[in-house]
Amino acid sequence: MNELLLDDVSIRWISVSDMANNVYLITEKASGKQLLVDAADDFEAIQELIAAASHDGPEPHIVGIATTHQHWDHVRALAATVEKYPVDTYAGADDCQGIAAEAGVTISHPLSDGSKITLGDVVIEAIHLRGHTPGSIAYALVDSSGQPVILSGDSLFPGGVGNTWKDPQRFSSLITDVSVRIFDRFPDETKVFPGHGNTTELGIERPHLDEWRERGW
Image (tube, rainbow, N blue to C red; front, side, top):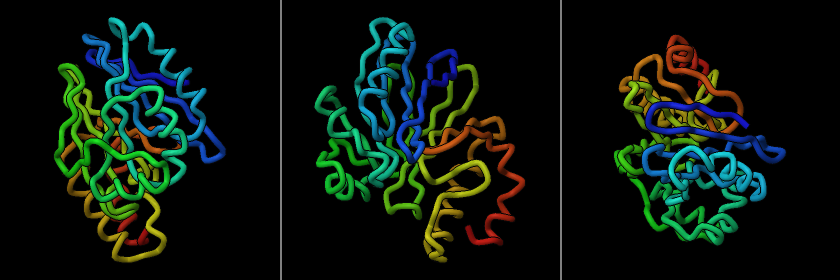
């Protein structure tokens, strides 16, 4: 289990399943309100993650469950999690139908680019990154300490953007959205938390954007 403790929020995460999916829990320290991001396989591990944040605020409690995109490995425990925590659910509008098909869950709040989720006094912004899936969403916040954080799903990783299955149009869409909507807006110190694998920072990845675009993946 990993953690990042900031002034306004704590972010805890675990890796689950043979797909090494990252599951994130954001807790707003002042209110104890929590947003779970990507209820991937292993509901028991998700409950352990939630238990680990039991002192991250006054009476921490789940108020929302967000999904980065519709792929099956990111929603395998979504139905069980929603049953246990019947709270607001969030996902990209263009992926809601796919999530319903994969997980049997109807998303209560379809998101578009720029949609906001409020977690106490913290505002989490939805960033629509088209290409890995039609409705892939990254979730961004800026702590009062000045630290920006982006949960990028499978759209941005250390070393490149997400899989677009050698489709030139999908790759062009994703690399453009990632460039314009993330790299052009956020500073180098922005921490990036992907859907699988290790965290990174925009300053580490920024020098390689042209290389990614040239190689086509």
